[in-house]
Length: 434
Image (cartoon, rainbow, N blue to C red; front, side):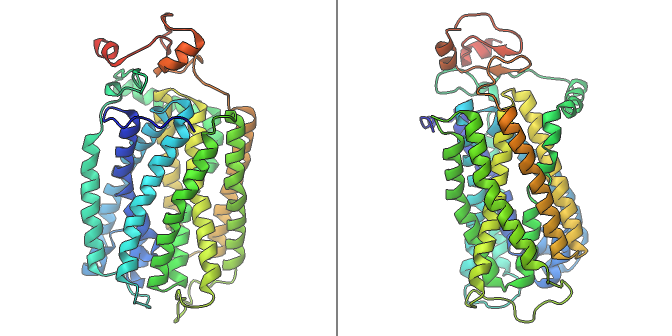
């Protein structure tokens, strides 16, 4: 890993932190609720949670109208938030920093889930039942999410940001609706992106599956502990993956292959274990005595839950890294982020739907495993044949500003740039004149 970025408000790294906080303490709270199973609600909340986590309203009122409407609103808003955060993670860093930006943002999302997870652990530490969490937990979550949303107002336009070497992040060129629509459609002609789609589909399906199995099998305080510890352990594991993906000595291809292997091996093992574990589960026969953290069998349940959660979470870190390795173009990366979040959301929605009709857990786990396996194959192919050492100075890299220190190393300062890639030092002052 390289030198740590300067902590300045106009620094792209600080803007990445702000975006991570905004996502972490909004979507991260959603993750914490989902991992509790049934959205942390009473057992009959489970069906509503498959639509949207509006569990407080359902538990208090019992009507499904508002949760369904809220689901539509959340879906639109979450898409915008995640695409913006993904754009920042991929387009703002230099090539040598992409692992750090991705890890910082996703770990902040995990930190939001840690905060969201510790509250029910503390409140329910003496509650060995399968009931829902108290109203105070939901109120705490709503307050946290409100202030997280306000933090998004601190984000600056990319052309107002400067790297530590003085160069700006990107050239901001406004585009009309028709031009934007054409660009959105053209991105689907990118065959490398298209073959990644199977890897995108299961990227958050594990949230649905893990939360559902957690609620089916465990009591409330066991569910709370599992959800809390999973996101706590995700953070150091993410930092370890970052060390691999930003390693200064290894080339990008080697980093991609090693990082993929480190994630793929436990990921495949975890989902094979899940398939074996749930093959005899009957979703229509709920246990009258759910597993508590004091029971002897809780030990192996804990190990498998951690393995499944951490490896599946790191899969998203890898997806973002591979997308960032395909291009430096802010325009292209914005579309990459949008396609990823769209396909991911579609996969999660289908999984929610299938889970709501209570398909057997073994089929749900088997389907998720199949998509992960296809994604692993695709990423090995891309890592071996299509990850280049650098994408700077490539044709078609629209809107890229090459960092000044890279230009100095190449002896290209002062050389007129092509329209696609700037090969001259561009500072904030120069950008403002443009």
